[in-house]
Amino acid sequence: MRKKIIAGNFKMNYSVNRADNFISEIKDRINTDEVDVVICPNFVALDRISELLDGTNIKLGAQNVYFEDSGAYTGETSVDMLAAVNVKYCIVGHSERRKYFNETDEIVNKKVKKILEKDISPIICVGETLEVRDSGKHFELIENQIKEALKNIDKEAVSRNVIIAYEPIWAIGTGVSAASVQANEMCKFIRDVIAKLYTRKVADLVRIQYGGSVKPSNAKEILECSDIDGTLVGGASLTNDFVAIVNY
Ligand code: PGA
Image (cartoon, rainbow, N blue to C red):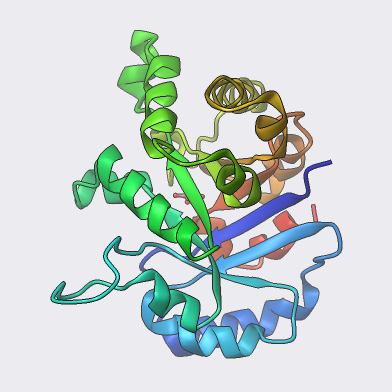
C-alpha cells in the first residue's frame, strides 16, 4: 500500500515570521499517522522552519534547487545547501517555473538527477494547458514530460524517492480543480508510463499526487481515487484549510 503524501507549497508567500507563526499554530493539529505531510516554504524560511519542525513528523520541502554543486551561480541554491537544513523533498518543474523561468524538461531532468544523488525526494510536476487538453494531446504531452524528467535515472532511485505531481495548468490557482475521474485517469496513465519505462513493480511503488485547486471540499474525493497517492496544495496550504485537507 502506498502511503499518501500531502505537500503544501507556499510559493512566494509568508516570510519567515509569518511562516513560523502559521506553522506553529497548525502543526499540532495535523495528523501524520496515516499521511506523510510536507511543507515547502520559501528558501529564506527553510532554516527556521526546519528547527520548528524538528521533533514532529512533518517534513520540510523546498520549492526549487539548482543542479550544480557549488560555484559562481548567483542567486542559486544547491542540493547540499538544502540537505544541510534537513530538506527531504524538493519540488521540480512546477508549471510556474516552466512558464516564468524557462525551466525546460532538460533542466528538470538535471535537477532530478542531482536531487536523487543526495537521497532527497523530488516532487516532479507535470501538467497540460487547457489548449493542449482541448486538442486531445494531453496524454502525449504528459508522457513526454515524464520520459524526459526521468531520462537516464535508474529504477532503484525512482522506486525509492521519486514522486510525481500531476498538476493540470488550467486547475492551478483557478478554483476549478480537475474532476476526480479526470485526475485519476491521468495519474493511472502516468503509472502506466512508468511501468513501460521501468517495471510494473516500480510503477506500483511511485507515489503520484494531484495538484490544482485542492480544497477541503474536494480533498477526500480526490484522495480516495485508486491511483492518486496524495495532493500538492498551493493556495489552501496558507490557511487552516491545509489542516482540513491533511485530516481529510
Ligand atoms: P493551487 O496550486 O492549489 O493554488 O491551485 C497548486 C500548485 O501550484 O501546486
